[in-house]
Image 1 (cartoon, one colour):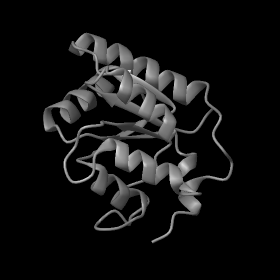
Image 2: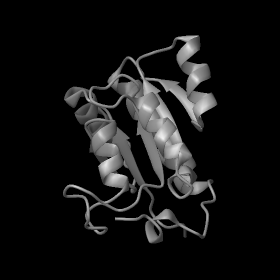
Image 3: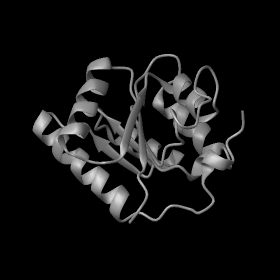
Length: 154
């Protein structure tokens, strides 16, 4: 039996975070779902800063869902910083945004995104997405034995 994975969502829209969490619960995925508000908070989480030090409460994510358009540090900047870090770059990142602009798709892949997904328009579609996401990442994806959780610096 595979270990549970932690999915971390970075999105500045509180309604989108709540809908995603509800869809995740509705999809009956057993993995852990957490969220942060923007790229700065995402990096604080990953680097164990500003209240994110407790690894039991804030486990290293196996997967990040990343919105592109956020204040303070947008998804593009966060993606570039994460993928330039020799430890953090191992964490797969799915750009999960309202954009469908070809420029955003290409830039996201150029920066190292694992995939680019436009947010579903209905709650039912969001639930279906979460089922597929949780099932795929929990059942089929092989993660490195050399997990970032042991290496992330303070």
